[in-house]
Image (cartoon, rainbow, N blue to C red; front, side, top):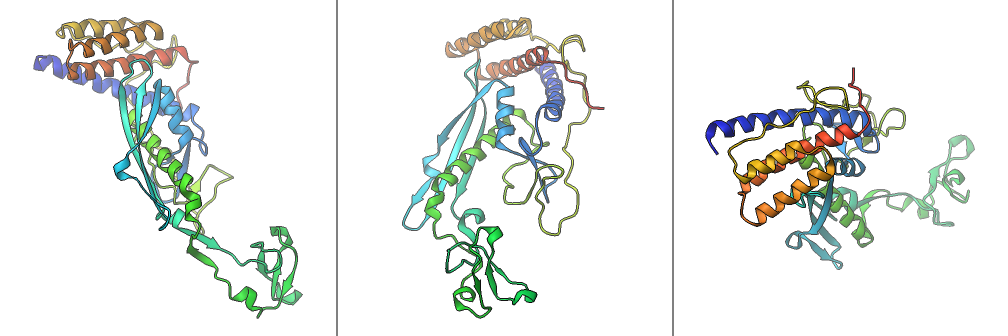
Length: 327
């Protein structure tokens, strides 16, 4: 491809990416729910993307996640209680059958959330961890608090059955019970990583900061002890070129078609001329066949996939109800 044409195509793709990012910002504001799809993390400048939000982003781009365990980075030892799992999540286009993004996620039993547990004093009578210190006006000592599910039994302050118990953070002796939880955590992290790579929204979301307290919205938030500052606002993209947010709102953005690709040019014309998802899928199948037959190069296929995704987003946007711009 001649250098001037390649430079022109690069500029057009850059413009389309800015328009896609602007649309994604609007989609997050209008269609994703804080506390369900993403959460506020104290100490983090950006919200963290949660699993439901990752699923929405993957579905928005008409893709499907495919999970694979990476055996060389996995370990299971029931004797020592060490478990580690690593997943690869490939995000595959439903129309093209091509891998558009890839994410990795890992979790292991020595992470703080799995390795330790909080131990509380248990009642010698009912074995419930509902022991509290009694108020001095009622005689002090220890009480198995009924409001915490206890039996109401009372103990003197020096009762060694209570005072000898270890409380606070202790090693989790039942780590093997969390084997499946650790596996699912690694899978979830891989999916979130893949969704962020697919949508190219790392400037809007972060991940893997679940060990901090989540501020899941106003009112019902759980904050770290002593914290008083407000959660950071959702980062949005800088204003870019206008984008079609529904029929009649503005002219759809149609990528310019390079005329020097040979068969790639015909496929690009097919993408630009598609008027619905069905006709676009046919072009997608033609791209797969052309690549399998060696009629287009890897670079041409990559460029065509970017044009395909831009057109797919345009058609998806035109088919959904109008989304008003945020004031």
